[in-house]
Image 1 (spheres, rainbow, N blue to C red):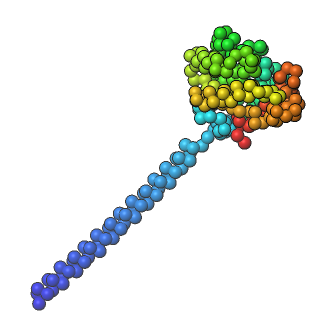
Image 2: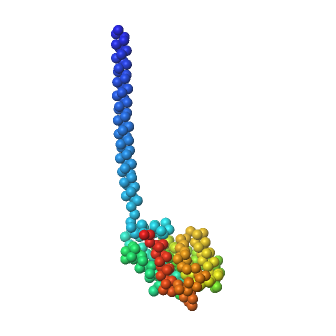
Image 3: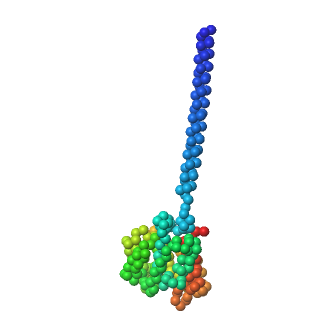
Length: 261
């Protein structure tokens, strides 16, 4: 009888131990899960805070990553974004598409967010620009971004495209030596009516930009077909330069690139 009671006591004790142990580990697991959820929630909130983007940087999200990084750096340094616009007489210092683009950037980002300097080089070819080392003009402005229209119209019929591209690479190299953080964005000049060789030059410029990993913006998609006489409304057939309507079309295309709604 004593042995039976002892056996029963041992069995009850073992069962009690198992139940207590089970409850203990259930509580430990529940606490661990709770702590994990709290930590996950905190991390998520922290991640959301880290992902909050300055409105100026957010507006620039259509630009290439290195251009966005340059803009972000300017914002963090609490200074204007220094944009240099350079090119031929298709890119006039006054009264053309650069003025219209500046107005659009001021409206979108706030007046003074961009500090824009325009360098117009009338009549220069890429060979002239390379020899005269005009990139030093831009480096003096300490640019974050350089929007370059590289004289293809002036080179047309004068300099073969392979030499043009060599000169462009040399000009950019001069800039990078003096202003290594500057981000270059290449763009073609305006289209002209019924051109034959010139559009092929522009295609090669785009291919060059892709090969060399330079940003490139093709604003030609915003213009009428250059084979159509409609282009005469936007490009003066005598000078091959943008008309008032052409300047507006060019600026609007660039504004879409620089400004994300």
